[in-house]
Length: 342
Image (cartoon, rainbow, N blue to C red):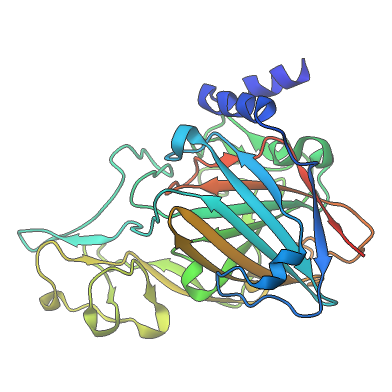
């Protein structure tokens, strides 16, 4: 009965995906075991031999936009050293999505920012990017049993999927959010968290989903003050692709360099400096599969981060895949656990 009540809290498409998850092929034990190594992998988006030492876990995810039947499967491996954790994630995605809201020059010389025509606000499933997210429990009661859905509130105003927040002040979850355009090019994962903040369209439009503190870097829209043009061009004012402009290479936008039909990246990117930039990463897409490698210190000292400071403990987490989607992600319906091997 509890499972039925849980499914009714979600849109029918998501509920179908969850039923598939619960009744699909044989599942892993739900435990991901980290293997200790002396020589860590190189973060290059390639599967180094060291990854053969770690046992894989396969996690089906369902309910996402653009994926075949809303589904894919995420394969995870983890190795660690005395100081750092390394994670390998691979998942099926038939297309590499990078065309995130670029500017396009029109025949009359004006510029238009390409948008999903069905997006009514914060729900783009076209002209976006691929993403992978993980959420780790820090202090959320019920996460160990239910997973990230304990903080999901479907049907509320705000995002198309509702809002994400914890039940009470002081309850936190650590979000690792890799983004193919906004963080991938600078070799990072966006280090975020979720707290108990409720949705307010003016004061807290993202509800409890927030970003760790930073002292510099990050991404920003590439738009002129009058909102009619790109503000910057890439090095040499070359058009897109790529669909991002590195902040250190940006140049003042020169309209004369472009012909009708040319595109200019809609986003400026730079490495996060500070707490938000704790996680390094490299991803490669090839033949319908994303391969993502990331690393982070076992302990960071930040209250917004899960601390892997007790290697005898289990650490609960959830996984979600975004296929060229802003919010409509495919997710694991149950929590998984990370344990550290001797």
